[in-house]
Length: 250
Image (cartoon, rainbow, N blue to C red):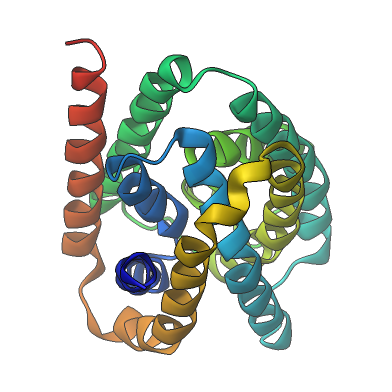
């Protein structure tokens, strides 16, 4: 019950962050779980199993609001699933003492990406032609997402928005595609991590927290100043994972 309640609180906090920023649920949850001593593979697995439910709800909502570009969705989902499954397989077959510093370094970079968004100006919301380059972007996004427990949004959404794609349909399409990516990653984790069942209280807590906080996150998205929050969240992620990275070499 203690584990469930702690992860419930983490799930609420992470979903509030994600609902306000449109990203960082996975990165935030993974950072906490790894700081609590859970291995990189188990942390990523717990986060992605929980995200099956949150991304499904998000995808349905975006479809109902007509926020999805179907061409973009298809070009993101297929290579995203391939990259995610590959990353999940590698993560579960590499010694955590080897992969953990790499994941910490990756999450520090994700923290920097989040902080950097404080200083970016919008270039407008233009509907652009969906180029082939979206496919390798999704492949890289899925791969990094499974390795780091999060990163699909920061990698894919940030790149597409920076390339001047329509913000509303970019977020809707990326979030909807994330359900398929997360589902594929979770299947690989469940097949390769037989001990995952012992973390069911953690997974249940993350799911419950995300579901509870989702409506409030949407409200905060309109009320809170986003740029200071970007700095706070990114800074916390950099500090926690930076310390873990330094500790790995001490």
